[in-house]
Length: 68
Image (cartoon, rainbow, N blue to C red; front, side, top):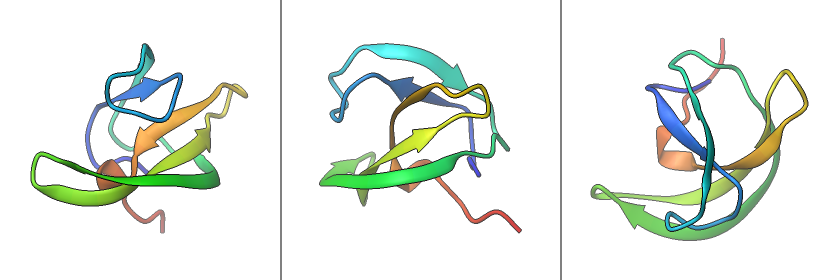
């Protein structure tokens, strides 16, 4: 689940094309993990995710939280 509104990117890196923005509390399915990067002082992996509508892409793992 997202902790805050974040960009949803087509590729693995922060310089990638943004394909949509996900709202806070969006639940995603984790498909895989990519490389580690530091963004805004947080070090985390890029995470490949799938949205409820079937769209797949990458988001920075530092913006994800646990879904209870």
